[in-house]
Image 1 (cartoon, helix red, strand yellow):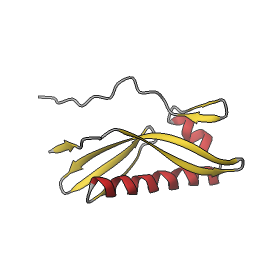
Image 2 (cartoon, one colour):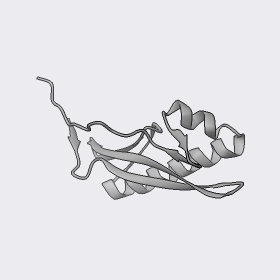
Image 3 (tube, one colour):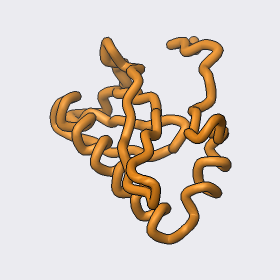
Image 4 (cartoon, helix red, strand yellow):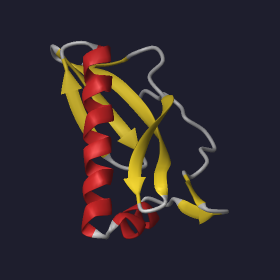
Length: 108
């Protein structure tokens, strides 16, 4: 059984170092329970982690997203990664795709 945690979708961001200074990358976090672990998933970046509590999962996810984006920056692939995730570069900063809806649905 999967349980959706209240506050399950919340905006987050990561600051990464770039030549011009720092860049803020926004993403949305969803957290749910699987067995005894809580899974945290960052969209649209598609990075996931887990932890024993929702807060531990969120902290682990923030670190994983930061490492993922920093590594992409170091490898010179950050632009490609963000474009694949539907981010747009507008007026000097990366903008996450806008969510039209975020729903929790059950199938019978």
